[in-house]
Length: 131
Image (cartoon, rainbow, N blue to C red; front, side):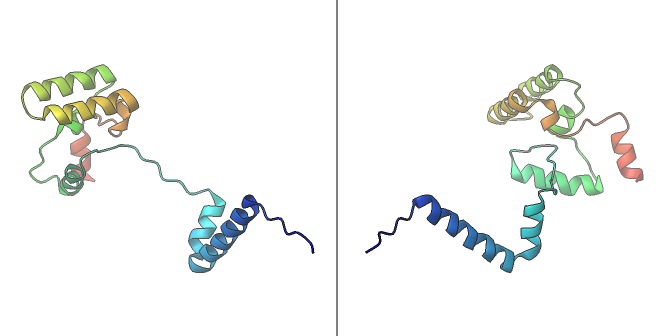
């Protein structure tokens, strides 16, 4: 009697092949995009508070009764030091909580001022309204 040797790696490889075939049958366009590896989405900013992000997205579309938040002020900064000053100022005035200030500082330290979004230059809101 011949002994059958099957390695865990070969079983795993076969399972992956089956999953890939199922993916191709079920979602052909997605499978094609994944295999091409050409499509990427760049994330230009990070908001840790989902509710604030959603509110901001709706407000920016209309700019009606617009009131800038701390992220807007940080996005006008040229460097991390300026952003840190903004965070400190807003925390001292109790416009943001200490907990939120810590989150912002942590993001600033780990990812830098650019992680809050692209820089808002002079006339940003005027351009947004006129476009």
